[in-house]
Amino acid sequence: MNKKIINKLCIIGVGLIGGSLARALKKADVVGEVVGVGRDVSHLEKAKELGVIDHFERDVSLAVKDCDMVVVAVPLGAMQSVFEKIVPVMTNDMILTDVGSAKGSVVKAAQAAFNVIPETLVPAHPIAGTEKSGVEASFAELYKNRRLIITPLETSSQNAISKVRAMWQACGADVIETTVDHHDKVLAATSHLPHMLAFSLVDTLAKMDAKNEIFDFAAGGFRDFTRIASSDPDMWRDICLANGDALVEMIKKFSDDLQLLSNAIEQNDSTYLEETFTRAKNARDEFCED
Amino acid sequence: MNKKIINKLCIIGVGLIGGSLARALKKADVVGEVVGVGRDVSHLEKAKELGVIDHFERDVSLAVKDCDMVVVAVPLGAMQSVFEKIVPVMTNDMILTDVGSAKGSVVKAAQAAFNVIPETLVPAHPIAGTEKSGVEASFAELYKNRRLIITPLETSSQNAISKVRAMWQACGADVIETTVDHHDKVLAATSHLPHMLAFSLVDTLAKMDAKNEIFDFAAGGFRDFTRIASSDPDMWRDICLANGDALVEMIKKFSDDLQLLSNAIEQNDSTYLEETFTRAKNARDEFCED
Image (cartoon, rainbow over all chains, first blue to last red; front, side, top):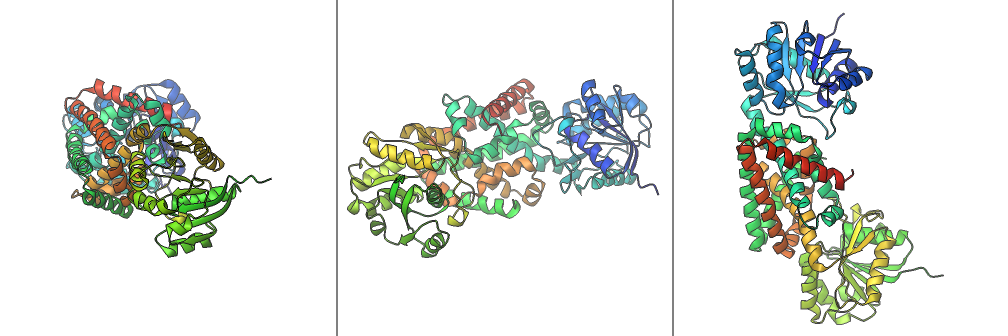
């Protein structure tokens, strides 16, 4: 009995995310062959050595040949050029998906490259990751019990949607479905805004005269807070450019509330402070149980 | 050989911070007797049952009697009323210290209560804690290898400074000395501002229509970020009121930088974004090694 979900998988961009996907699918024994593509041969050799991929190609159009699943796991800024390389060899049997942190920009990139968006394209986004990057950091359990958001398009075929869903379920992910727009708004709030605050906070403090003491005195809470400022700067530049509208709106909303809090501190408004902190604590404790 | 640093210690406010101090000193065998005081008898009974304190009193002026060390571990808003209860029984042999997160307001409270600040008063602040509170959460290792800032006053005697320093060193803390003003500025940056951002972020998100999904989709980074929003609201109200000037100034500095970042996103200024994120990542990685 052949229980493979995918016969030949191509991972374009074999880093933490792409590498962990390949590992998980191999561990679950639901994939036949895994081809990797990337810009850096030494990384690809490392990925092969680690058993993450079976072999690799330098050329995207060669790599995707005969693949029934192609996962584009490159930075958002590189999506369009990758899609353009796939165009000449695209077939109706090739399901195409990605792992980008913003979905509207992926759809735009596909539109620009393919002109008519293929019905096998199903954008997706695993809500998982660490501050580490690279294939060496990849592991099969990265997606276990983590959310995986798929944002099927009006053009997406049921078959393609089912296959992408099955692939991620085989990795242990909890697959949920929403629209491209809604995904981008929610992620701007829950991921992109917090990253901006962390990057901005660390940068503000690092510019101060007392910066050595500031980082020296930093207690537990602050370290947790700033850990996410260790994330890859290039990836976050791309996310800002890709989801700018939703993110700018969220920053505005946050800044307005912060200004109200600051006013309350200035006016010794203990009721406002107490109520805000209590509301936040209750929301936090209710939703996040760790 | 008597290696006790303290013969009779009074802890006013036997929670996480006061309780952990008592545990650490007992474990190091440098304290004779430990008396606890607090508002809630059931908490004090629990503290006694856990062996954190040897006995307790309800009345501060009875509790501090014959003590050579008194540690005030109550919320900042309660400092002055506690000091006022100590005034009638204060002696030159009683060293007085606290654990407040802001120091200027403690000095003000002492000034108001004592009129002339006693030379045995040495304000201090352990840079340690968890989001948990209460004596049940206390443990002897809380201060091990953590910073403890003492801010001796012009009036503080060398003997009092040495004793407070020795007490915390016996808990494994790394004792550093600075001024009241400098402490309050640095802590506004490194602790109070990040807490405001976390509280404010969680509150902003909790007010949104999509709040269920927002908290549902929250990935690792966000959880780290918001963990500190679980801290005690009353304590943070007090900190805001106690260190308002420095905190409002820091919020302004942060908000100005965040606005520049938002402008850069709006204008697709990839160079600004890349440079800011890289600077932040480098500062973070340089200073925080975990």
